[in-house]
Image (tube, helix red, strand yellow):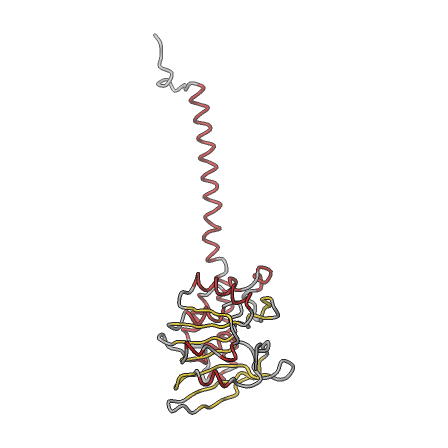
Length: 263
């Protein structure tokens, strides 16, 4: 009697060869998926611990700057923004290992991304609300604008160095649709988008630029470092009251790159 080879458990050679080939392909596919999955998850999460450590450092610094803050801690909403924005996405590749370090970092063209605490402090001092419209002078890598974008309705940010403006603009467009960027001299602000509820300047001016004061809404605040590059600079809080009167307050010594452009 002839026995069916399929039913006997003995497969023809051509079928065994096809099965082995399929099995090998399947194993390779599974291995590729297993290797890719941790990378995909890690891209979003592998620096969470570093961001948490950065936030703790910000909180420690805040306790020593309580006089400037008029409080003993940074606004929790600002802290959450610092926690959620991936700072390493806003620095050049060679600086990414140091993205969460407690210091400024170079971003090219003689410019820097500010120390995390300074970003948090300046954001906190603006005292923004969810429906506010804020101007940033000095886009740099886009990190300060990204933090603000988590907190307000719209951010206009202006950068005088075209290469930085272009790179930051593309990055911010992908991540934060409520940020508008342009190339220009920030000393003169952005008149056609004014007035602003808050203005933050991320480079040191010799004096507070009058055009920026004019573009600040009554009831608004501006945070700006003032001083020359090789002298003592101070972080200043400029406030315009409901009647349009302006007051300035010197908060603490800082060190920023100079504000570029025509003055």
